[in-house]
Length: 94
Image 1: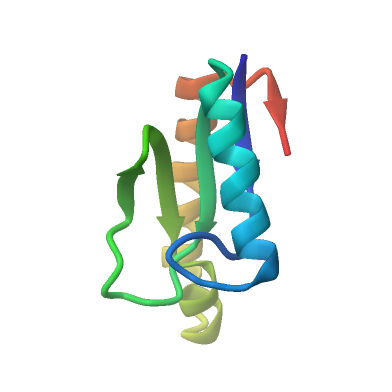
Image 2: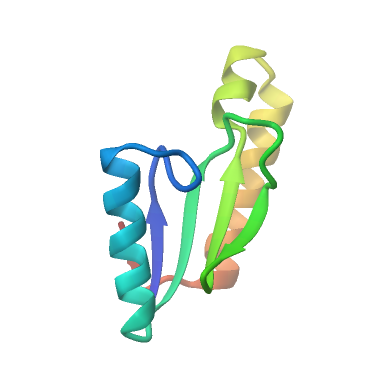
């Protein structure tokens, strides 16, 4: 099954929710599911795309675009997310 796991915070952020999300995603991956994690990119030093233990992570600068009041960047983000969803064709979005 293809799962799009959409969460506000994810690895390498450390906290209870982030840790629980990471454990859930890794357990689902271990059971054979293909997962993409979509999360915010609040640290510009983190890559926008990454693979962590076989799980693809996509970080998008939602908050930065909102704070900058940059509608062009928001439109670009929307287009990238839409394309990712079309290409991945998830069976489930969490």
